[in-house]
View 1 (cartoon, one colour):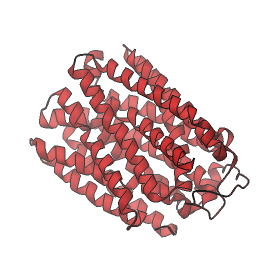
View 2 (tube, rainbow, N blue to C red):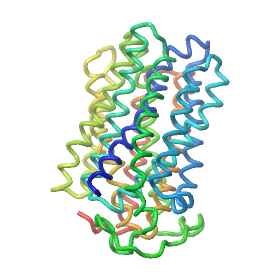
View 3 (cartoon, rainbow, N blue to C red):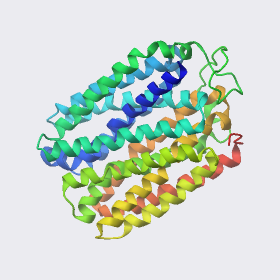
Length: 399
C-alpha cells in the first residue's frame, strides 16, 4: 500500500507543476489582448506568490489538523478553480483577483508534500518527485502553445489545464484512505528517512520566534528566496526574452520556453540516480556551477541556438538544488522541526518568486530585456553565499 501512496504523491507533484509555467507562456499574447504593460505579468505573479506565502506559513498548523492527503486535495481543487476563472477572464482586474486562490492552492500542497517526502522517503525519491513537477511545468507551455497555434486563444490553454487538475484532484481524493496513517502519526525524532515511522505524539507547531532562533534557519530561508527568485524570473520571462532578444515569434517562444522545464525535468530524473553516489550538498554545488554555465550561454546576442541551449542548461543546474535542500532539512534542523522549517522555506521561496519577476519586469520596461542573465547571476551569487553559511551553522549527516 505504501508503494501505491508513493504513486499518488508522484501524481500530486505533476499537478503542482502544471500551473506554474502557464503565465509566462501566455503573457505575450494576453498583454496584447488586454493592452497591458509587459511588467504586469510580474504583478500577477506577485499576487500568486503572496497567496502561496500565506498558505505555506499556515501549512504546519493546517496539515497537523487535517492531514497531508486532505490538504493536497483541497489545494489542487482550489488551484483548478482559479485556472478555470483565468480561462473566462476578459479584463485585467479579473486576473488580479483570481491570482489569489491560484497562489493559495499552490502553497499549501507544496509545503505539505515536501515535508512528507523529506521525512518518509530517500533523497532519490525527492528528486524524482520534483522531476514530476518538471513534467507538469514542461507540458503546460506546450498546451498553451498549441492553443495559441490553432487559434483557440490563451483562454483554452488555461481551461485545458484546469480540467486536468480536476481529474488529478479526483484521483487524489479516491486515495485518501492511504493517507489516514499519516493523519494519525508523526515522525519520531531521529527516524528521518525511514519509510515506516513509529507512531508517536505530534510535536506542537513552532512559533515564528522559535523558528528564527534555530541556528542556520535564517540563511537557509534567504537561500530559498534567492533560488526561487532566479528560477521564477527565468520561468516567467524566458519566452519574452527570446522574443525581444532573439526576435522569434510569440507562439514559437511559448513552446521553446519549455526548454527550461525540460532541463529541470531531465536533470531531476538523472539526479535521483546520482544521489546513490553523491551527497545532497555535493549535488547542490554542482547545480550552482551548471547554472553559471547556462547563464553565460544566453548572454550571447542574436543567436538562437546558444539561447536554447542556455535555458536548457540552466534548468539542468536548477534540478538538484530545490529537492536536495528540502530533503536535507530534517537532518540539518531535526525531524520534529521539519514541517515548520519547510513551511517557512516555502514561504521564503515564494517571497523571491513574488518580488523578483516583478522587479525584473520593471527593469525590462525601463532598461532592456537583455538584463535577464545578469539578473540571474546576482541571485545565484547570493544563493551560493547563504548556502555556505547554512553548511557552517548546521551539520548534515545524510549522504
